[in-house]
Image (cartoon, rainbow, N blue to C red; front, side, top):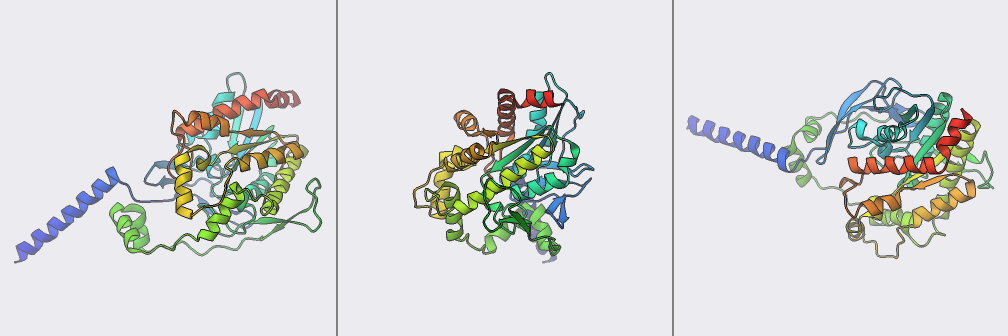
Length: 377
């Protein structure tokens, strides 16, 4: 009897080991974030200097290393002819990509043919324009950049009005509101709110939580047995309505706040003698028709939508505020006919980062921004 029990237990363990191995190879299940972000009383969260970890999802497994200055930075000889700073969220941070293949490193390489260029990556997962503005004011401005690139992604619109993060980081964050009687062309109308940010509760450290991050079989079973709260349809419809809905009047206050943030960012860059350039990173739904159809079905988006609305909104803001705008949408739409540019989680893959860098480098040159920055030096 004892031998039968041991045989049965051994067979069960062997089956579990084989199932775990097959899941790892054929259908990875775990999601694990690197422990490289830390609480910040003014910004909500920031990178922890000299921290390391791995970002693991079913699509990728990449190393994260944060340098002493708090950047996810590639190796660079730190050229001083042209100093560029890159701000943005997880796209700028190079989510899911080895840092040497990310936008900052690629852009530096594209511009380095005849220049001593450095591109410092201030990209931080989950940030909106509001946090990026504060990060520049508190840190970046003191480093005398020649060019400041702000990568604007669709969900930044809603990040900017929310007191909590809506991406990978969902804790409390700073936010701005327009002062009473504020004019878009004026200055000083933005009111910072929500600071200091309180310390968040500690992350769970239970055995189940740990197994979800490392054991594919456990992660699969946990999701199957745990009832997930459904995504509120009204909230998702509002989210997509603000970005792509044709009822632009209803969402005008949201875009007005973003305009004021961009105008203030440009003003502070000008004070420091830096050129300010907005780069629009198109969402995957704007590039891949199948992905948009999936989102429409999932969130019951039955109204009339215009996927070019964010582009037009930013073009209007850029024109009114005199801000150079590089829209990556045409280059991405053309390239997507032949190549896959996004992971399924909606971030750029390595090909997407390379295309973004090539397009931005060419645009900076064609707009005369590189030549003007060098003349000013």
